[in-house]
Image (cartoon, rainbow, N blue to C red; front, side, top):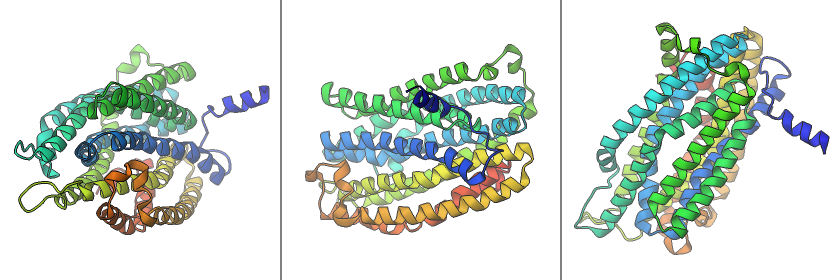
Length: 423
């Protein structure tokens, strides 16, 4: 029992990415990250499943369609925090703990500013963004009206909780930059459990509908952020911010912005493409007279298929995230040869993961099996299966391009070269 406890505690020890066999280090660091990202998808899927099984087709479509708008804002914040972490990771590689602590301080300040800015902008832009994806407030069409109200409510509440979600991702990025990828995984597991409980409580018991799903999301993420802050404070004494750490020069601030903003825009640009696609998908559910097709099959099919796509993409995204910390730590330590070997290994791993993803993804399309994960049978019909399968048949094989993008982008970002990946 004592040995097992000791082994479990050792999982919380940060991994020095500048030492040890490269492939072992990368995999050991990658596994908790991919588990975290898979749980992040479960986190999102939980909302979809519970909403899909309990609410109307229009409310389901409202949440599903508006998720791209939610991620447009959140991905910008997440991208910024990931970019900021390059600086602290590079300082860790150089064994400069004071510089790492100052970087932490700068990231806290920037994250607060970015969160508040995103909340304010998002609040005023919701109606216009919903119009972009063909969801409009039409009192003459009760079906469209119900979908609009559901989408507006969901997006508004999520935007109001931007600070909690950005801070959670900030702490996750910082801990990974230190070489600690296991603790963020546990925080996400705990957050997912809380989210499921609150979803069931708010939606089924309290009958809060779409708003219950949104509140469950921001509360669970906020609790995870608080837990991560307390953990970092307790475990890493040198990371505790001191009075003098608040005195940093403009060039150090700009260094963080140089790494963070391009990555934030990269993440958001991908979401803009998804929003354009969502608008096109929604148009398939609009009749010639402007009313919605009963059951909104295109939105139902695409909504489920995009969730499966996101779940499978987590494997490639996690590998890219692991390489960001690997490259930046070794860059700070001046380990050029280790960087070269690590890059080659990462592309071999990425290709293997892509082959696995294609197999699993295409198998899931048989008889539209994945749709039954999210929706009750009454909401599924041949049209929704057709729309969902068409999306997966095209997008899953093309994940090879995404694999190259994730690895190349994060490797260059690790060298503090953010402009080229952005372009």
